[in-house]
View 1 (cartoon, rainbow, N blue to C red):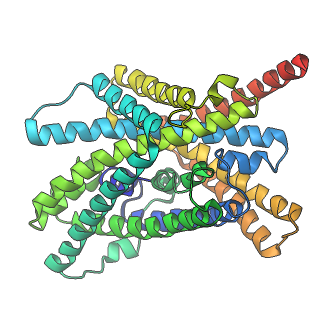
View 2: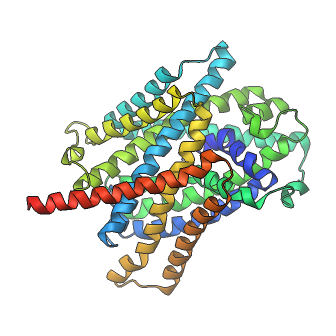
View 3: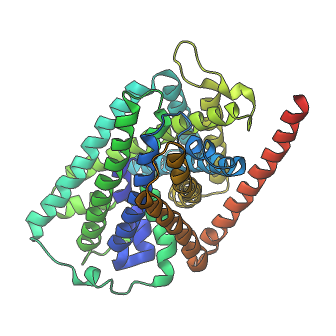
Length: 427
C-alpha cells in the first residue's frame, strides 16, 4: 500500500478537490474499503490462489465476468505501478533539489525505478518485501512523530471548519473519493501470494482486514492534521511539494521532514515492486486460463518467480511512463492520472468479488443472509463511486479517464471472444 506516500502526495491532491471535507472523504473511502475487505477476507478463507481477486471471480461467476475481473485487475496493478513510478520520479526530483539543487532527467530515472523493481521481483521477492516493510514502518513512524509534535507544539485544537465541511463542494467529492480510494488500493494484494504465504487461509484474511482498518485510521488522522497544520501558512496544502517536510519545519523537527521525504521516495519504489509482483501473477493466471500466451506461465527454476510475466509487467509500466514523460507530463501528474485510472480496475474487481462471494459460499453449503447482504451493499457502493465520479468530474483530464477504462475493458472482452474461438478450433 505504501501508506507513507499518501500524506506527502495523495492527500494534497484530495485536498485540492475536497478542501475541508478531505478527512470526510477518507472516512467514506475507509468505509467502502472495509466492505471490500470483508468480502475479500471471506473469500480468502475459502481458497488460496496466485490469481487473487481474478481467481475468486473467475472460479465462481460465468466466464465473461471472470474475464472482466482479469482485465480490470491487470489494469489496476499496471496503472498503479506506473503511477507510483511517476511518484518516484517526482520525489527523486524533490530530494535531488534539496541536497544537490539539481533535477535528474526523467527517462533514465524512470528506467532505473522500473528495471530495478523488475530485477528484485525476479530475484527474491521475500527479501525485498521484508526490507521495504521495515523502511515503510520507519517512514510511517516518522510521520506519526511529526503529528504528535504538532499537538505538543500547538496544543489540541478542534478545527470547526473541517468538522462543518466548510466550503466543500458536493460536485468535487466524486473525483476526490476516487483519489482517496487510490490510497487504499493494494490492501488486498496479499491475496496474490496465496501459494507462497505461510498458512494462507488464516494469515491472508487477517492481513487484508488489518490493512484496511489501520490504513483508514492513519489516512484520516493525517488528512485532518495536514489541513489544520497548513492554517496560516503562505503555501496551500495542494501547492506544497513536500507537505510533511513543511510541517516538520514548522514545529522545529526539520530533520524528520527529510527522513519522511526519503521514506516516501523509497516507498514509491516499494510500491512499484509490489505492483510488479502482483501484476505478474495475474498475467500468469490469465495465461493459465488461455486469455494470454502460454509463455507467461513460465517460472524460473532457480527463483520460482514468473520471469516472463515480470518482464512484461515492468515493460508496460516503463513504456507508459516514458511516453507520458516525452509528452512533458510531470511525475505528480502521472501519479494523479494513472492512479485515478487504476481505481476503476480495482472497483471492477472488488464489485465482482463481492458479487461472487454468496455463490461460492452456497456451493460449499455455507449460505448466510448476512454475508449476502454485505456483498450486495458492497457492489452498490462500488457502483455509486463510479457513477458519482462520472457525474461530478469537472476537468477534461479526469473526465475522460472512465471512458478510457471502459474502452479498454471492451477490447479485453473482444480479445476473449477471439481467443475462445481459436482455442475451440484447435481442439
